[in-house]
Length: 130
Image (cartoon, rainbow, N blue to C red; front, side, top):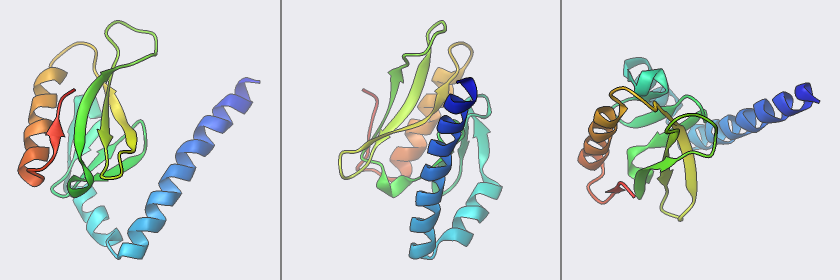
């Protein structure tokens, strides 16, 4: 039973990544995405990589262009743990997506502010926070 749930979880992530990869190929930006990933910086304890054009979420295997962000925000998580929090974003169609887990302790609130500032610099029309 455990193997079934693990396989289902992995399949969901692979499906999301394949869908995004296909979209990026259709747009002809795969090389730019890979280059941006190579130059990106780890933040939030390595759960998020911040590039010049994209955010790369580790836990969700999600690639987010700054231009597609309507709103980016922190949300309390439903998983066990002290002060579990996640980073989410909303796109132009109103769809909400999980990006990565935030550290429950430490300096992640400072990193989150830096991420908000970077998103606003790249996309002044985006909203940040709740």
